[in-house]
Amino acid sequence: MTNVSNESVEKVGSSSKASKLFAGAAVFLCIIFGYLVWSLLLGHSSNFENGDPNGHPLPGNILGMVYKGGIVVAALIGLLTMTIVFSIERFIVIGRAAGKGNVGEFVQNVQATINQGKIEQAIEECDAQQGSVANVVKAGLIKYQQVKREGLDSEKATETIQKEIEEATTLEMPMLEKNMIVLATLVSIGTLVGLLGTVTGMIKAFSALATTGTPDSSALATGISEALVCTATGIGTSTLAIVMYNAFTTKIDKLTYSIDEAGFAITQSYRRFKAGINK
Image (tube, rainbow, N blue to C red; front, side, top):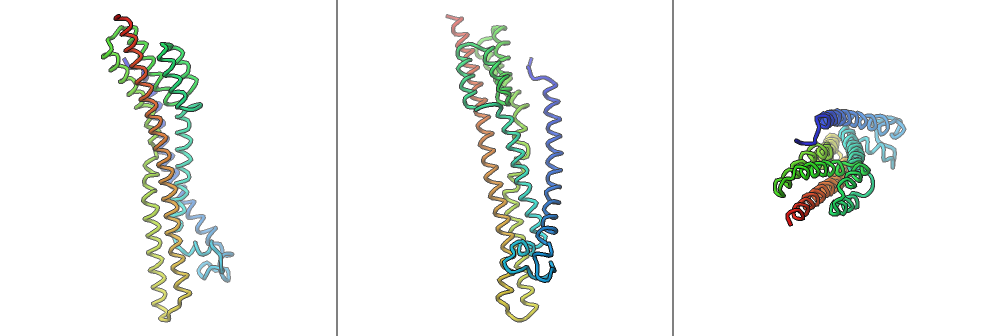
């Protein structure tokens, strides 16, 4: 029988629901926040000539110029805020999953303890570490003790222990992948929305130029600079999203590798145990 309890399954299910609710609420609130910043802060009358947001921004006023990028700027601010919020959320979750102390040192200590046949001490180290890796390793160690009492042969015991570790990993690790898809999506959508703002801004600039009928290089330059604000914001959002996504992916891969490393040590320890009995 597996050591993975129904309580653990229910805990993962409730955590998954909470994560979905958080993601939905965060996306909605970030979009609202972006609109409020665009309309109330960037569109404040103090940023424009004669206090009119429909007029020209004050010379050198960056906030007013960004506001003139249009409603797309509000969406871009919302996307940037999403990137920051989900990056902080993933940082906290993955940090908790890593547990206390350095994961690499923990795995090395557990390996050394297992190789010495001190399984109970290894389990105590897992309890002290309090991370997802430690929980998975502990499940493998408990199964180790069980197959040891049953006297299973090396092949059967290895298969049983590995299955237990895989089942424990299925419960512990999926939360690390939650909301990573949001960051991955922001990598692409940030640039695309920025380009959309640039295109619409250029259309407005050239349309205004065609309406007046008189070439005005100053007005055209202003319109183009306002449009390019969207490109800069979109690229900035995508850059932050891809940096954070790659950083978190690396951390998750490191945790997964640590589990595989510890699992291998457990199975090898049992093989040595059986070999010593058969001599």
